[in-house]
Amino acid sequence: MRTLAVLAVAVLALAGCTTRDGAGQQAGPSGPAGAADPNAQLKTGLKVTFLPKQVNNPYFTVVGKAIEQASGELKAEYKATGPSEASAASQVTYINTAAQQRQDVLVLAANDRNAVAPALKAARSAGMKVVTLDSDAAPDARDLFINQVDSREVAVKQLELISAAIGGAGEFAVLSATANATNQNTWIEVMRQELATPKYAALKLVEVAYGNDDDQTSFQKTQGLLQAHPNLKGIVSPTTVGLAAAGRYLSSSEYKGKVALTGLGTPNQMRQYVKDGTVGSFALWEPAKLGYLATFAAAALASNQITGAQGQKFRAGNLGEYTVGAQGEIVLGPPTVFDKANIDRFDF
Image 1 (cartoon, rainbow, N blue to C red):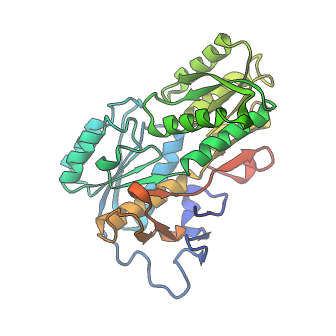
Image 2: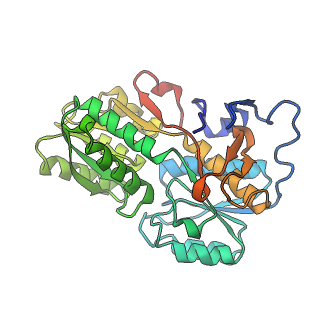
Image 3: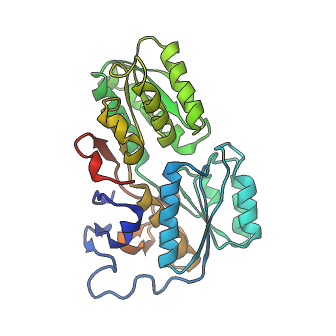
């Protein structure tokens, strides 16, 4: 798996990034030295729609801004749309609308891999390219999936963090997003597999709760977990909304400093909880890079540079060259762990 340099970037700084491509060679904003404009062979004027799990989610706001920026670099038209709640069927109407508006590209994070599949298949048959990110749809319903990290790697990282936080033994719970979220369920399944190994024999997962990627629901679910499990030593929340809500609850409760919290969140959301001792560490990839990569992958599809077949290569702007993996999956890179020592170096 490709290693991407960890950079403290705001979304608008992406165009100036320097990173390493899949071959480990240095690539700058305009690609390798002496190369022609890497965007020259991509179509201009593409219509790009971004459909997040829900609007007004801070994580997807960062992703959306990066898609907008990449669209600008590609001279594409950009629009964002989506539901206010991350429910299973809430995205179908927006998919149908994008197809009716003859959008060239749809970039979405699926709330339910199967619920959105029929609408995506119809949209693709009408000529729209579909790229999923963060949370996949059924593979036969989209062209590419931009996976933020290797699924096993991010699941194991969260287990490592909670194990270290609670001394390697005791009860913990998971505060997830929606019950049908593809990425969440994959990570939780990997955690269960790891918990069955000798390394984590002293850890016990007592409950998986669902906050539906809603702040207030996640806040209440945190309270419920603590009341239902008096011996609870930690909570893992692999969703930015849930992690921030759980941090807010713990920071002003009697459980602060007694119940550990980790998961996946953005530095700007979690900074205060790290500094006040509510959270020791948490992890995430750089969501701006995720959106940026997805947009260039979609443009490569729409420009007929790639079809989504395994082994095909394309250039993702200043992020360098990427290769399509099995079942049309492209992996961004490894997660970053944030703690009190480094969190102020990041702004997203």
